[in-house]
Length: 86
Image 1 (cartoon, helix red, strand yellow):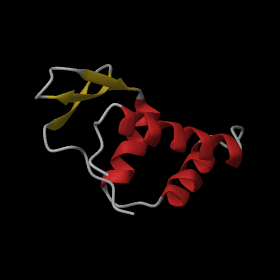
Image 2: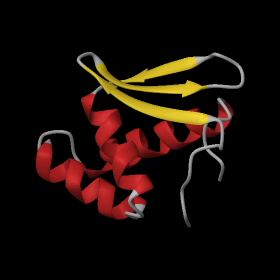
Image 3: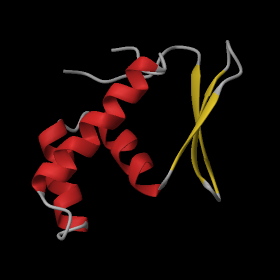
């Protein structure tokens, strides 16, 4: 599955994290460093399982089930917010 942002959504890195701005509605979302890492990986075409593996390597105490849930939660939130095109 290919992941893409909606056409009117821009991404900007700031000192506070990564900001997604829906230029059509003016709504924005702030992602922390981990959320930004997941988003960048999705945009680069990394599979959810590849992202989970990266998260487990970065945060070994979190566990695979937690990493899977976190990635799925972010994907769901991006879709509900209509930030994701897919």
